Length: 281
Image 1: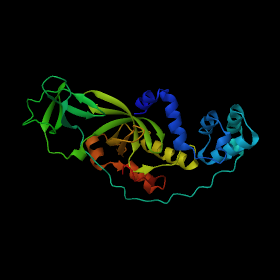
Image 2 (image 1 turned 135 degrees about the vertical axis):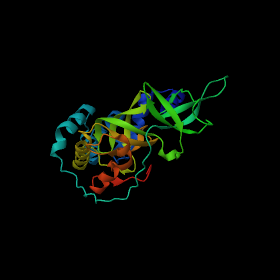
Image 3 (image 1 turned 90 degrees about the vertical axis):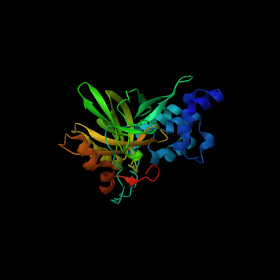
Image 4 (image 1 turned 60 degrees about the vertical axis):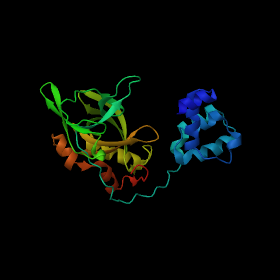
């Protein structure tokens, strides 16, 4: 959408992304009229709680962009630490658990040709399969995949739509307390790298002490695991799929992890490391 808007306005899409970042991150300071666009981009690099301080200083002292950059880099440690209010431990986020290796039949778009039913593997991936053994296969039918030798067998099953899009995933990196970079096993030998946002919660930014504690908690919980199970939902505004994440140290049965695993999202709430986030919950 942003790239299309940039094309319509005949401006570089990177500049439009910059404008969006500034709009989301920076309030309209009383000194705004004295700051250039480059000053605003530089202020994005400062911690949230110090931006107004640097904006005021840049305006009053007439700092150039380079001088502002140096001030942020060298003076930040001299600023008084922000006052934070400890988060109260809460619970109550309801887990959305799904069933592994289940897929819905959707239509493959083929202009000027007969319709074809394919498997929706999630993340916009489609796979053509032989449906001859699936009774009364039609649009929306849900099938379960079972490994058989070097191939797979498909069986029609009665599974609710909200139980689909459940996968085994390998954690490549804990980005912050509520974001993971993972490799998702979509089935049939298909893997997809995704950045997942934990559904229903929000942890502090990583540059804060609270954010680092949340990051360390997730790193300790998942760092030594062979895999986790993720139940994904729609993407958020940053195109990260929302996910419920489950883990069970020492367990090698992915189905058991999906059904009984520790619910990471709620663990962060219980430990007081995250707050409930209504949108997408």
